[in-house]
Image (cartoon, rainbow, N blue to C red; front, top):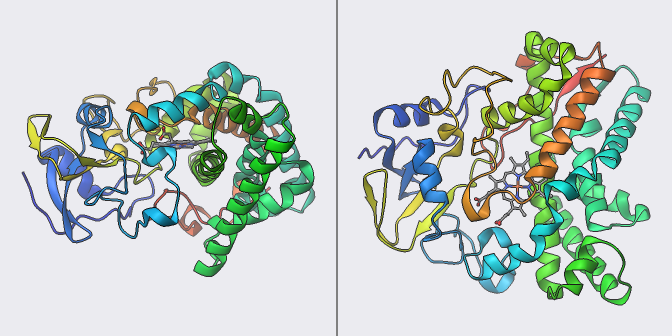
Length: 389
Ligand code: HEM
């Protein structure tokens, strides 16, 4: 066991998890470190991360005292959502919503996602010869997709999109962010109330018909927006930045578009952007990888480091579209594994296919060095991506 006071989530090399985490993986793969002034077990190997994330005795309930994500939590102020629940509550709520996200349901969305992406690229090309790809493509695509998934009427898309963008915009002040979040919550609650009166053939109406209480559904709608917007946007930006920085990878996709699904999987593994998805609280004494973790201790599965585990991914720091990386942990693992993963894969595939096909002269307007990365999370990504064509 190692105790270090230098544990930090900051990424310094844009293509790597923090080097300190890779060192822990090599030298002492389950270690106790100091983080935010308290001890935290970090789990860095792929197999151990799966064991931990698959065991619900490691709790996701952030209202529990001692939970590593508990800071500032006020249970009266907010309704718990799916991502911070344990069984049986979690099993029941997730069971109700799961059939909205099956491979088949999501595959049926492909033609509409393609239209959304084509329209965003049309608008970007019509705007001139330079753009910020984050504002032109990465943020609007997932925002429109989620709006349509939730059944937000077309006339409200601008309000929905403006507030979603303000919520994640680095230039927004804290007050602006809180105001945008409040407006979105209020909007989604209003949408749920409307579906009670006027049910239609949409996700919210189907959930109401299946017995979901209105406040639970409003919290879920908001979670879908938060969980599915900035994450997907960050991945779109990182994928495009990588292809423009490494022309040999871009050329591979030009020569053989059938590599796209493998490329998406590999880039999901490579960047593993959800930095804080693996935080849990042990509610029993549990052994993981030969180390006893005691009830009441905080635990963190470092999925970005686990996804560079050389025992699972040979030559893990190399980007290889043909490696078959599907067993990565970028969407987490176990009962909380990303509900929207099929949708995220679809959006990434459609966007990358369109970028490769439609933007043959696309380049980084200020070089790779000019990109400012979100080094501190909670999701890894870029703040803006100046491109030209
Ligand atoms: C590239 C994009 C995405 C990444 C990397 C990502 C990553 C993750 C991760 C790591 C978790 C597990 C968190 C934990 O274990 O506590 C998660 C959960 C979740 N994600 Fe995603 N996600 C993405 C896109 C989406 C999309 C598009 C949606 C839906 C529209 C979505 C909805 C959710 C929900 C609802 C959960 C909670 C599931 C539960 O607690 O049972 N995500 N996501």
